[in-house]
Image (cartoon, rainbow, N blue to C red; front, top):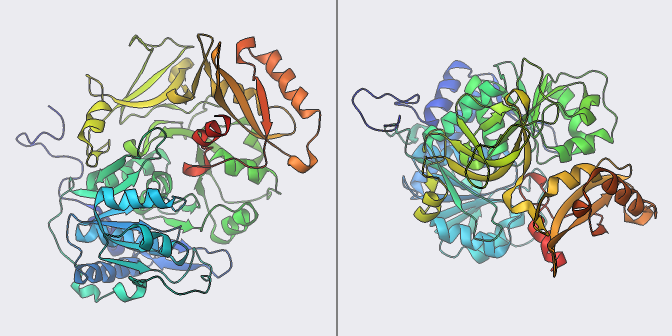
Length: 528
């Protein structure tokens, strides 16, 4: 029996609650406190109090109902970071529709797939993507377009047919829809980035969103006086749940930027007194190349690794974590009030069960690297399902009810874990298992290397061999001829001979996927 079984007297943590309740409660208790602060690059920041934002969401929800959007229907939200993205998300979930947030870097075929797969009835987008959406999402009833592109004026041009202005959707907030709260009703969908198959649609319930809000806030030690600086894309779990929903849970403020900008980061942080940010190594590396202010208000950062020595220059405690769209929050997280093992991702979060096993299913010993699985409650602490894909949902769990993450972690002392690799990023070199990340961690220490990514290249005798793509710190134009030999020397010194790269390719940039991660599938195509 689980917490979701409808047994006598079983009361879940969000019984009688949903996302509209959370926003309404904060509008009542923190009405004049800033909730979202929209900080575009070339215009003054605009603050939305909890009360003002709640009222505006009600107007949009009433307008969506008037336009025929019904509970249980899907609405595509194809927007870069902006206040309209959050208005649309909350308005959809208030009326009982399902908000589908999609990656704005998606290609035409992907947008067509997203809309058709979920059966979207309408879309909300921006001028830069309006033609793409209109041309590829033919079954939509209507498409609404906001007035700007992530804070910048749109390029002049004719609006595509079938589109209308976003502002026309708003109605009287007094007519906002009312419905009985159901924590296990569908709330939102995010599409995971696909590699060998079509992206899967991760379906969250309202309880999932509330779980993300509450547990993320606890893991991050967020409080009502915190200001969370947010620049990662809001169409993903990190910014949506780690940053925005967690801030909402405690009544804090969330500063939204269009995207990450190293040149604007510290000025925005100082202007708004930012105390927290969820970041990624890509962003921190860029910030290291700029002047770091001697004084700032940050007390904590969260990222992929605990207290990485290379980033001590920021003077901020950095906690690591691991999570997925399917887990809503962190299944593994660093300690806020205790020392962490540098470069670890943290310890098992108290809200989950974690198993690490070898390929034969035996428990992985301390010092070894194994396959990561996580146990929670579907619809509460784990996603409800992969939409319209019962087989993929079933296949993603083992016989004991653990979700198979596809990630590998190394077990360290005292319960700490270190990220190993995605299972698909393991190389098979002459019968030996090789982790791409192990090679990358050696290459990145070589002076002159800004970023490195290792992928497998097919080999007639050894099955696969490692190839490393490198972005040199100087750029290709000023590449030092000695860098190639320095990288190879470092690898030969630190790695077994079968792990040493067989080829180095220097590039000015790499293809990117979710949260600026290197799209290794695209790198593999370059080797094909």
